[in-house]
Length: 330
Image 1 (spheres, rainbow, N blue to C red):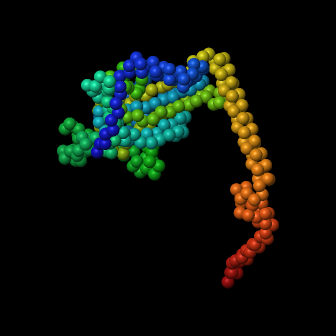
Image 2: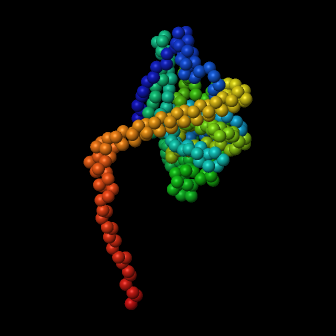
Image 3: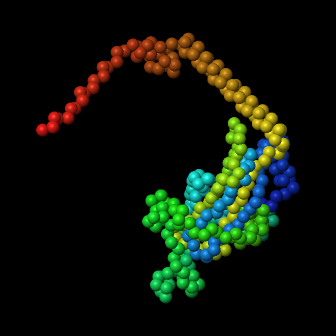
């Protein structure tokens, strides 16, 4: 079942671009800032039209000093569903499901809104041809009249069924590289329309340099994206696109270090101001309560005298039952 949400994309005018530039200057300023870049974009496809994985896309970090990131976007002509895990140096850093929503973009006749994005909420994968039994093959799945064995279940006993993740021994051969003529993973406008594919944004993973100093990532650390599904997906024409990005400041290292130091000092000044304001508020409150002994907002029920009475009231003695001793053995 599909539920559709529509979003309109207008053609930018000279006025809107100018307003955007002014707004960007007001919001971001003209000073030092971190700027995202795309290092490379790689696309992969399944070696089999009907498959459920698990597949692995393995990358190696480049050792960026400021910031490094990966993003996975799937382009599919039909609904697909599955699970993913991201592992950094062998440790799972995130996991989830993909395919609940798929975005398609179509051209319109509206001059001001030449593209329309429809978000499809898809409950089930469109994988009927990967599940149709073939009597001639004794129940094996058939695609286009050719008998095909059903993909194995990565959650079968001995394959990580209790943890809902595939075992390392169950991983199938890697996805194969595929051509990708674009310079980014997430397509917009005419590129998206011309692709004739729906877009599934899976996730984005990023690392930032710690504030106390150091680098965002070390070079050569293994980063793996693992994909699988409960049932075989129809992966014919499906593209798995990984975008590898990094961040660099728009100034040289010395200027950026000076900017960071000024940011740190500014944060310390703001924290000191907050502490001074809090101390002044506390002092005013203390003085007010000292002068207004009848104030129940300061002292509670009965004001100051009620608070003193409660402090001096005898407390009920605590009684504890004697411990129950076990009967002696007979």
